[in-house]
Length: 101
Image (cartoon, rainbow, N blue to C red; front, side):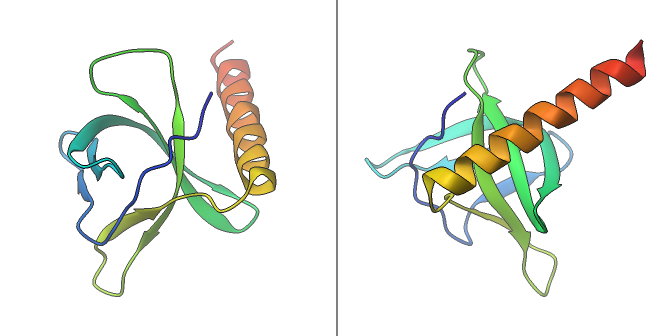
């Protein structure tokens, strides 16, 4: 798993019908990701996404909605926060696998 360093703004687009997220990259241009899960960890919401075109990488961002309910993302600020988020996501996946058994 990795944390892709991208800039984000209130212009990030989450299409709830298609469950895709388009992110403006630091280098310019955009990249589209498929939303895997929005989850809570340590009192804050996060989003896990993977590249639309496949691949094994999972990227994590802070997730929030403004007063009008418009979704947005922000980069994870520190290595410690990133580690906490990946641990929470791994636990969530383990719980989901256990429930399917």
